[in-house]
Amino acid sequence: MARIYLVDDHAVLREAMSALLAAQGHDIVGQSDDPMVAAAEVRQLQPDLLLVDLKLGQRSGFELLAELQRRAFKVKVIVATMSVSPRDVAEAIRYGAEGYVLKGSTASEWMQAIDAVLKGQRHYEGKVAELAIQAFTTPDDQTALASLSARERQVITLVVNGHSSAEVGAELHLSPKTVDSYRSRLMLKVGVRDVQGLVRFALRAGLIEAEDL
Image 1 (cartoon, rainbow, N blue to C red):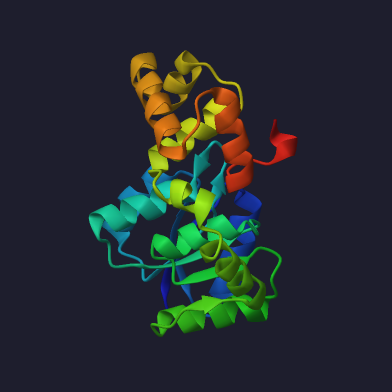
Image 2 (image 1 turned 45 degrees about the vertical axis):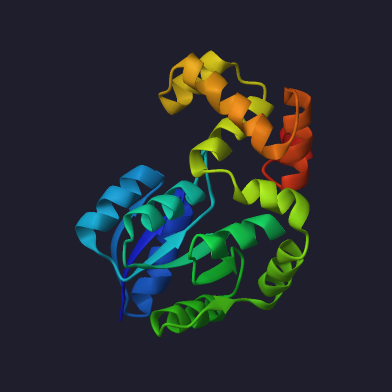
C-alpha cells in the first residue's frame, strides 16, 4: 500500500478521498490546499503519490507541479480535477503527471488510476486521453501557453480578471513594478498588445472561463 498526500482546496473532498483511500489500506500522510506548503511537506514526508487538484482558490496546482519538477522530487502524481480543458491535460502531462482523473469518477476508476501509477504505468481515463490528443494537435495558443511559467499563469489570470498591478502584487507578494514587468513579458510571449488581447488569449487557452469575467 502507498503513502499518499492530498492537495485540494475543498476540505470535504479531502476527507472523503482520505476515507476512500484508507479503506483500501493506503496511508494518508498529509494534505494541504496551498501548493507551496504542499511542496515543503512533500520534501519532508516523502510520500509515494500525490493527488493534486489544479484549481486551488487563487492558486494553481500547476505551481506545485512546476516546483516538483524544478526540485526533481521523486514522487508520482495524479491530477484530480474537474477541468476538461485540453490544455490543462497537456500541461499536466508536460509537468510530469502520470495520471489525470476527473472528479466525479467512480471509486473503481480512482483505484485503477492509483494502482497503475504506483506500478510505474500511466493512467488517463478515456475522455482525458482524447482531450490530450486534441490539445497536442492544436499548436498555436498551446505553444504560447507552454511558454508561460507557473508564476506567469498566476499573473495573467489575475490581470485579466481586472486586478491592478498593486492588487496583483499584494496577492503574489510582488512589487507593482515587478508585476508590470511580468505583464509586459506576457504580452510579448503570447503576441498581444494590450490587456484586452490578454483576455482573449486567456479565454482561448482555457486559463479562464467566460463566466469568470
